[in-house]
Amino acid sequence: MNESVDGPNEFEPSLAKCELVKLWQNRMWRASLAHYVAADKYRRWHAGLTLFNMVAAISVLFLSNNELIRNELTNAQLAWSDYLLPIASLLTVLSSAVHYLVRFQERAEQHKQAGNEFSSLKRSIEKELTNKELTKSYVDDVAKQYDAAALRFPHVPRHTWAKCMERASTELEMSADTKKFWDEIDKAR
Image (tube, rainbow, N blue to C red; front, side, top):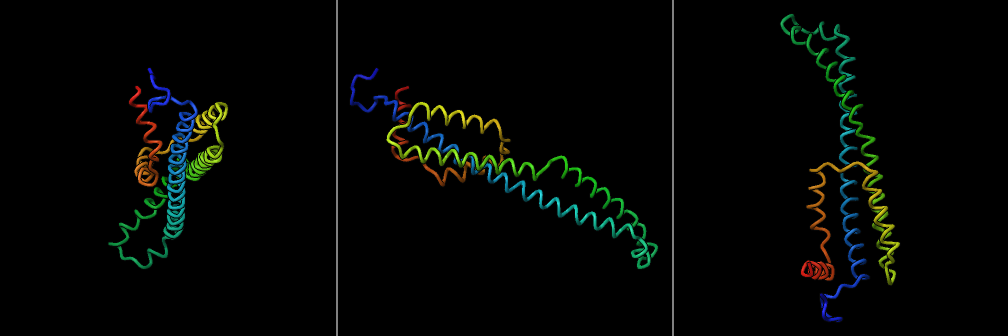
């Protein structure tokens, strides 16, 4: 297969390990970015829904004291005001149910923890890349930690992931050496 020991097609396991770990580092950076963005989105949804619930609950309290409203309204206007309390009550119940069932705050916290874990793994790789040689045990350990983190945390919604990948591809490009290495691997296949 490889006729030349010094040729460009020679497969070097140490270089392959280094490139593999760099690829994982890139993936972990993207995963941490996507999880942080998802955490922020869920935190905003939680805050918005909490604010809506407060306003809806206050309006139910205000509308339930109909004497204040009825004294100021004519008979023609009373017809639509009779629907305000049931509508406000229904909106309060529905938004509270969504708030409880979807658990935006819990999801935000899980995505934040996932972002922290992937960032920590990325920093561990950066630190290890300063060593002269990556050991097989280190590569195996990173693979296990990466797989465990991917299984332990929730997935990022597809549209959030797609937006983050667009952003990440413009912020992080493959180095020339990494691109050359993968081109050589593709040629060898």
